[in-house]
Amino acid sequence: MFNADSKIYIAGHTGLLGSALLSVLESKGYKNLLTRTHAELDLTDKVQTEAFFKAKKLEYVFLCAGKVGGIISNKTRPADFLHQNLVIQDNVFEAANAYEVNNLIFYGSSCTYPKLCEQPMSEKQWLTGALEETSMGYAAAKIAGIIACRAYNTQYNKNCFIGVIPNSIYGENDNFDLENSHVFSALIRRFHEAQKAGNSEITLWGTGQPRREFIFSKDVADASIFLMLNAEKLENKPYNLGTGVDYSIKELAKKIANVTHFKGEIKWDTSKPDGTPQKLLDSSKLLALGWKPSVKFEDGLKATYHWFKQHYD
Image 1 (spheres, one colour):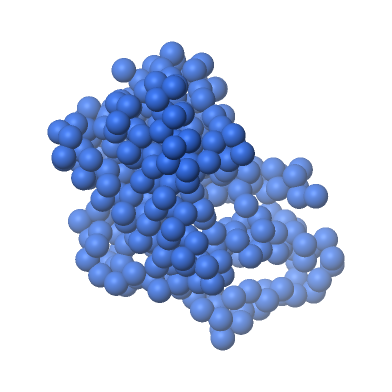
Image 2 (cartoon, rainbow, N blue to C red):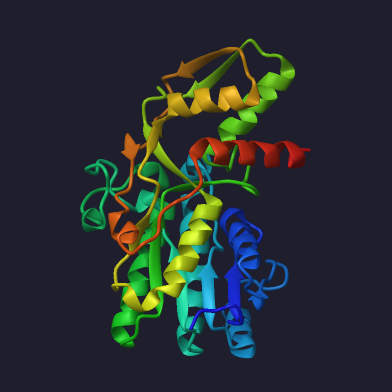
């Protein structure tokens, strides 16, 4: 039973989601939390991974570790995203199965849905069409991870592995590197720097028309704990995790301009790609179990920008 004394491993605890999980678990009184940096444990190394799981006798695992990035890095280094994520997933799944972890949560991505998918995207529409080209390597690895959850559960007749598909996560401890970050954090940095420099205008990629759904990292962490607590009620299928609200990139840009106090003109370079037109998840299956998000978008945005300003240098 998942409780305050359970031995819990957070893989990838220094990242956006992993750090939120660590913070929320600690705030809820969970005491036996295990973390390892990449230098301490290389999850791409099968021998190291198996030895760690064997020695620590882990009960619950949140698999947040992996290679993530924005549209530029996904487009230019698809093999890296495919290979590194596949290796980590395979090593962790094999070790978790071999050493009888009670439950493991694997995090997929909304980019595993078809590019031209009916909105909002329900779990029934998963794998029903072609993927967005620019994120195909990353998406393929995440698809393999979600399939692995079902495959291990089926073959070994247990409901151990839980596949979750969150939409775009944002929050404290995000990656704000312009080459490797997602649109939310990249825009925060762009607007912050433009405001600091006193620029009269800023030019952003695309038309600004695509729509995206964003969920605060601590809401994802809270939902993850809820799923662990209710693991026996879950089907052997992935669960969407979102807020049910999306924004156009133009709307997002205006909100970020407001919170960063940027007063200049926002221009759009329509020669640059837009990506998938819309990514809004239908999370009704998870909501029906009794969980719901609690962080308002504006509050999450302010908290993220406050964290960014404290750590920017």
